Length: 248
Image (cartoon, rainbow, N blue to C red; front, side):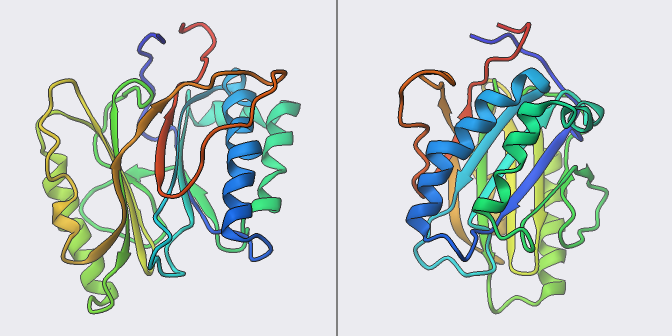
């Protein structure tokens, strides 16, 4: 088992991916599971990838404005992320994005500390303290904005929910981002925390496309072993157990 190694809350790239129109959903999931997610898992830890939580929402009744895939990619820090592109392995993995995603719609940014206001396409973190997102329990929510809710009300209600969550006992981390028609949110719980109802405050403004705890997943093989890849069939949420240099 990996040792706990905490990193800053702003060291994570918050990914909201939209499927390439050139891929069917089946092709999208197959490429994710056979190539993309294993590639991220195996190629990037030596460059500083610290935690990886990829997810797929339920496709049933999912509006087009909701991302087809989400992911958290924690790095040792932001500088480590930028330095990673000096490595051939990271550049090879990054070059896969254009084969899988609509790169005109898909986005990833580092978050800023939530201070009461919410803007579209700006990720926020709730707890200003380091944490290890690979070791502790992660819950994830992907929601579609209710059609009866205006954009202004959506932002306001999400801000109210976030303010309430910030003070929850046992919460070691929280992240969220909204778009015009969606919200993605993650919470990280300490041992023994009461995690019930973390996303209940969103029920009036967003219809859930995914609401589940991340499943801890340890890859059974490596780069040079025959294996089919990592299961990425919607809906799912995996907390990949990376081999982190110097921490196992």
